[in-house]
Length: 480
Image 1 (cartoon, rainbow, N blue to C red):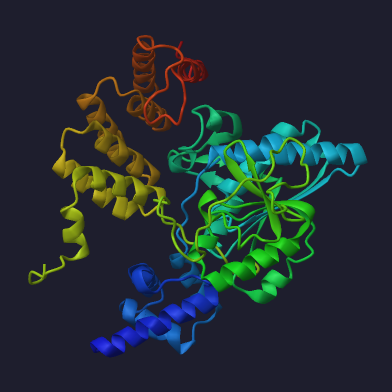
Image 2: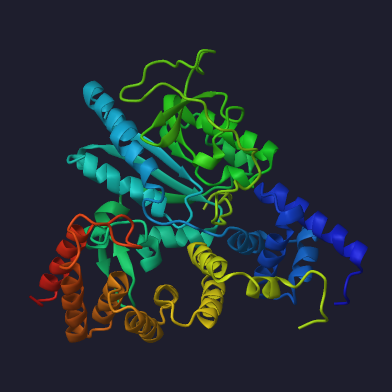
């Protein structure tokens, strides 16, 4: 296909961005145009097209069939999620929202709960709620739970329904979380307990599809989670979605969004409540001009909430994650260097941060390439080799992952988390003697540290907690 002249190319990409906005509500024009081009480049090969430009032409021709739209959705939606992401929010949901709902239903004898996780990605958020419900409801078998996760990306939904996850999905949890709720599979992956999987179900839903959203109104949901989604919509689309979410909730129902999405204008139909560091919204009368709100059990009065324009990325949101809408089920030197040259010119700390961000976005090929640039700049940085090992393990390359963890430990023999990752990897590969040796080394390192000290890169886990976990792992493997 001949190259498109500059002016014509600009019109083509503007038109393609408009079509994506109409189909999915996503704002991918202006400074977001590189994201659109990258997504269409990925979709092109799967659609049998030569390049991103050919994909854009097909898109604007509006000749994409349903299968093509699904392929496009799978490339436009980049899932950045993990279990119990934003622990303050989940702590508030457990201690106040879910506990209050359960107490109310016990008093009335109406043992039903309806919860919707909109834009659920690969299901970690939905299953995090399911795990909380199991912990709060010892008699959960006697309850009618409707826990729904919806997303536009059919591939994400298949992962969610299977309930099988790699190590990257557990980075926000305590080390023993997998042991309690998952069973290890071959290849270093973990399958969720059937008792948890049965609590949730998943369906396809496009948050930009007005007919689909209309079907969610009057849903009588007790709680809706729609986090890290609205900021990627246009202002108009964000308003439509919030209106639909409001209609889907019962009176006094709860809405959870990301802190960066808090907006007094966008959520005018709710009252904002600050709870344990998290901001939640409740359907009902807004606070009066003095800032007071109707009394809520265990929840402080509403506080002023910062406003971020809908449809933009908050400055402090380092990770890139598109929303999850859909319908049921070397060149000549230039004044401005190319992207790769710009990235190569970044300071090492920025390269390291980008490698972590790419891994968080599950763009593992790019994360690995960025990690390799980090290592090229700082060959003796154990953190770079440890991250490389995590990325390789997530993609199933266990021998190279093991080698990366070993290099990290060679450079920093006291690297507890690299040692733990290597021990678990060795066990996964059936090398029990090697695993036992690493577990013993970890315990020896931990004995030198204060029991209540937090460990670096361990998500707030203390020395005491990790010591207990490692001992349990050794017992489980008959390595006492």
